[in-house]
Length: 100
Image 1 (cartoon, rainbow, N blue to C red):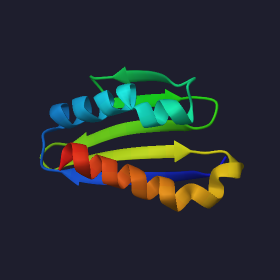
Image 2 (tube, one colour; image 1 turned 135 degrees about the vertical axis):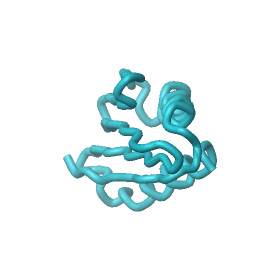
Image 3 (tube, rainbow, N blue to C red; image 1 turned 135 degrees about the horizontal axis):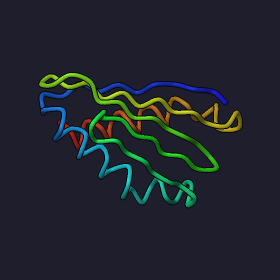
């Protein structure tokens, strides 16, 4: 499976950043439409998480504090490789929307 990263830096503290990204990943209707089998696991103490489904998987890391860096590592099937750039752009835009 091809893998790529999306990173975003914000001035929010790490706890607030983690909660906002966690909420997005848990409730995103767009992600659910793409893959209804998604399951999410989060570890607030280590500021990490994972989202897994049949069509893609993603790991989350939140690093530092004000500025805080969000790192999403996404794995997609080979079939979705032509859409990698579009997926990256969409996730970058969404991180900018929810984290500023």
